[in-house]
Every structure is written in structure tokens, then in C-alpha cells.
Image 1 (cartoon, rainbow, N blue to C red):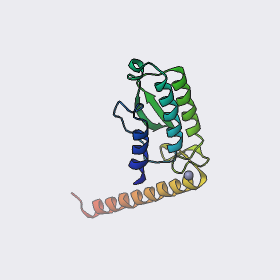
Image 2: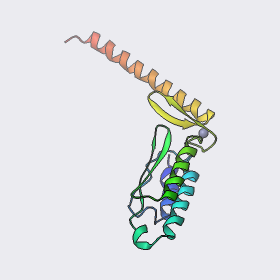
Image 3: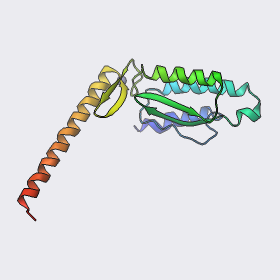
Image 4: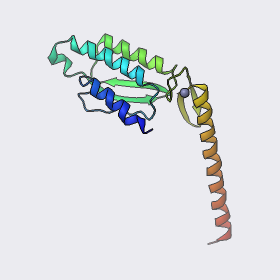
Length: 150
Ligand SMILES: [Zn+2]
């Protein structure tokens, strides 16, 4: 997680045209960093081949994850930008969001993410441990309530 700000900060600095809106990349994992780098590079090329007054109004407005996939929103778009983003979003559903290896979307608990086999197992273990912890705390609360009638 400590890797997150620096890799995304590098992308934002590498493509200042794409990030003129001052937005950050709202992702907690770094597995899609190459996908984001590629799509930003395509958008950057497109903006460079456009009249300046048009290019100025086109920038990334939000980059986040939704239903296990990348979501890349722009203030305005062109067919090339639209196509590049669609492609990146579809590729993200095939790449682990933690490490970038081959992955697929899976719902664990109430949250859908795209993981490789290794990171899916890690997440399943984390969620299971959290449930056990919650159940123990709940049990402790019930015991406390029964010992302390009011
Ligand atoms: Zn992985």
C-alpha cells in the first residue's frame, strides 16, 4: 500500500495533459499500473494531435474501481479516447488488481475484485479471519450484556 502514492504520482507527473483537472487516481492496489500508463499514453498522444483550445478541456476526471474493473472517466472524450478506455477497462477484468498477473473477477464478502489465484486466496483468508474476529467480538458483547443486566 505504501507503493501506491509514488507509482500513481509518477503517472500523473508523466502525463500532465491528462491530469490537468488536478484529480488523483483512487486505487488502493497497483496491479493495473501498466494498463493505466498505456491508456494515459494513448490519451496523451490524442491530445497532442488536437488543437490546443480543444485539448485543454479534456482531462481525466475520475479513475477508480467498480464491480472489480477499472473505471476511467474523462471530462470530455473522442472516439479514440473512448476506445482506449473501453479496452483498458476490459483488460483490467483479466488482470489481478494487486500484482497484474492473469486474473478474473470474483465476489468475496460483498465486494467484487479481480484477483489472480494467489491473491484471491489471500483475500478469502483475510475476509474469513475478519468474520471470525467479528463473531468473537459479538459473542463477547452478548456475554457482557447477560452479565450486566440493566
Ligand atoms: Zn495477484
